[in-house]
Image 1: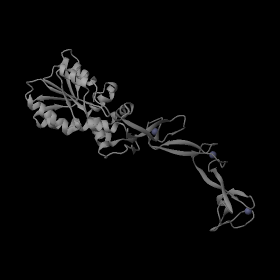
Image 2 (image 1 turned 30 degrees about the vertical axis):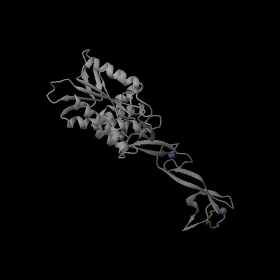
Image 3 (image 1 turned 90 degrees about the horizontal axis):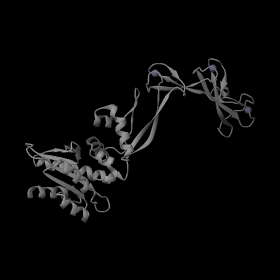
Image 4 (image 1 turned 120 degrees about the vertical axis):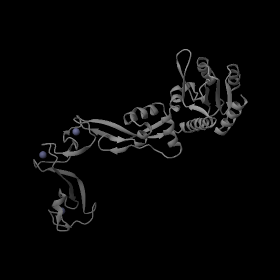
Length: 327
Ligand SMILES: [Zn+2]
Ligand SMILES: [Zn+2]
Ligand SMILES: [Zn+2]
């Protein structure tokens, strides 16, 4: 998209990988991109791995889309990594605060409401009945006859009792036990498409796709995004670059510009002119959705840029077709 104020986002929309991911969101194939648990690395995003073909690029790719406010992230989980082997296959162990053993017995404290006697739950069992060990009355209803007064733990190693155990982390990969101070904790996110991105990106995406298909049918070689090197030595990026099959002639370049509410300003015309001045393509098109400002039209004429106004992809393709045939 030719939106000078959001250059990074514009570049992102030209990225085929971004387009592939967006089309999955826009078609409803993905509503929320959720990570999938994998015991070795913690979490993966298989969909993104398939698109990128390189698992190591998944993190930077998602960060980029989050930074550009294309995707919205939401905390999904936190992964704990082993400080020794970096595995995410970590189990939490609740340990005795005195001797650090994880062989602890967890039980409930039960109180007989009527007599006030309190003891561990298993002291109240008498066969299949629940009986107060002090006054020997049978207890039937929870919160009426008796109530749970909390949790009580006993260490099977040092025999001491306590109410709050100490958590440690046991690595199922290398067997090392680590404390909260020692482990690395990483946030894991789920992603959704930002609401305001939807309309703009879908139109841009489908417009590019429709124009690509049309140009390919017209027996042109198409690159999208297309990079062309200018006389200055700089490389310029266009939404679409098309060559004649024999490459004997210079390219046709197409940029898209969209305004969701009002008319497209002259800015994309100026941006496109700066590039074609250096690249000198055979023809340059600016497709403005839905309309181009009067000033923009005047400038386009002056700069020999063919401006096409279109409300949708059908109109854009039909108009481009007419323009190419008229040449
Ligand atoms: Zn480990
Ligand atoms: Zn202990
Ligand atoms: Zn009692």
